[in-house]
Length: 98
Image (cartoon, rainbow, N blue to C red; front, side, top):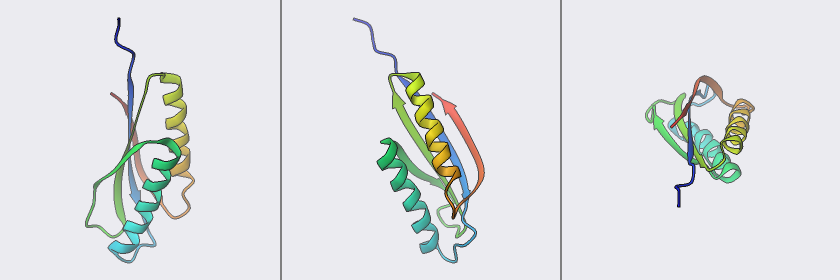
């Protein structure tokens, strides 16, 4: 019996939250985005940098799938959801295949 194929994609997004006036504002914006990503895509999402900056955040989104095409489609939809966020500005976005 052979091992099933496993594909992993990691998307790292650096965000600017220009309207945030406090860490509470920033946390609220980031939490909302993380919750949407988790619920819609069953993705693992973590805030990985700029924890103490009011208007900056970096999050990582990871999805694992046995079908590369489905994973590519899901990651395209993840990027679209992030790009459409009205209250966030994307400073950098990088995708890796692991």
